Image 1 (spheres, helix red, strand yellow):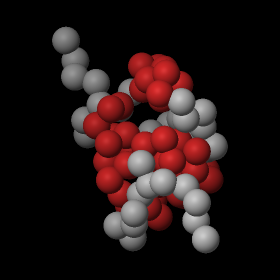
Image 2 (cartoon, rainbow, N blue to C red; image 1 turned 60 degrees about the vertical axis):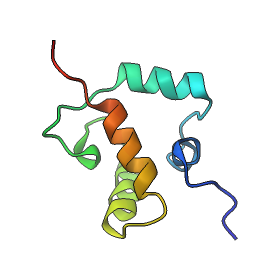
Image 3 (cartoon, one colour; image 1 turned 180 degrees about the vertical axis):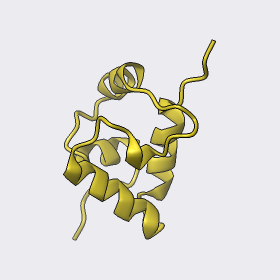
Image 4 (cartoon, rainbow, N blue to C red; image 1 turned 90 degrees about the horizontal axis):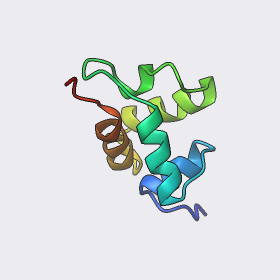
Length: 79
């Protein structure tokens, strides 16, 4: 049985990342995406992290809302 919640904290845990609020904020502030780059194509993912994200999005899994939220957090609007 899966014990992880399908939210942003749970997604970070699934990706093997630190999942406390301040750690998620630090990740978001130190990683960014251009709006035309898909989350799964970001250069900072390991192959296993990328594969997990691909499967989460392709299958419209329970993780898709959290992956969408992460993508929105990482898109930086140029100033």
